Amino acid sequence: MPIPASQPLPPSADSAEDRTGEAVIDRLVEANQRYAADFTDPGMDARPVRKVAVVSCMDARIDLHAALGLELGDCHTIRNAGGVVTDDIIRSLTISQRALGTRSVVLIHHTGCGLLSLTEDFRHDLAAEVGQRPTWAVEAFKDLDEDVRQSMQRVRTSPFLLHTDDVRGFVFDVKTGLLREIDPQG
Image (tube, rainbow, N blue to C red):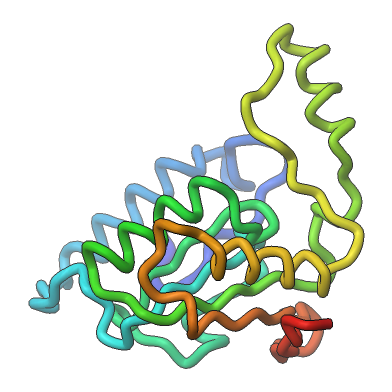
């Protein structure tokens, strides 16, 4: 029995199949077909209504739109492991600002992040396993607040970004759902 698109997919074990034996991606495609059947073009362009870009961790426990009271079209959402500001995040923010009009940047890390327990050894182990060194850094960290400060600094000092005066950083608590703002000065 297919589940409505509004219901979450059941969790699967360590495979690409869910408990029914169906491939997870097939379930996603089926959900998209149900979604598309009732879809109406909202008539908006790619420019966020609130002129804000949100950079956050990819952690599945964080529903950014719900947590921040955002609607479709309000913001650009840019996610990666840890929510750290990497060259690719700067790339996306630059396009967001210069081509699509955003002016504010919200940075969100979170409690219980997997990058708190990783080190650059992860990268070295991966290179040993596959025979090729990754071109990217793990960007692991031990101190959430300090890494948010570093991310704010990377945004504020980027020569590619037009708007660096409204940059704020937060830690999202995965147990309470609350944001805690980080003082950029420490």
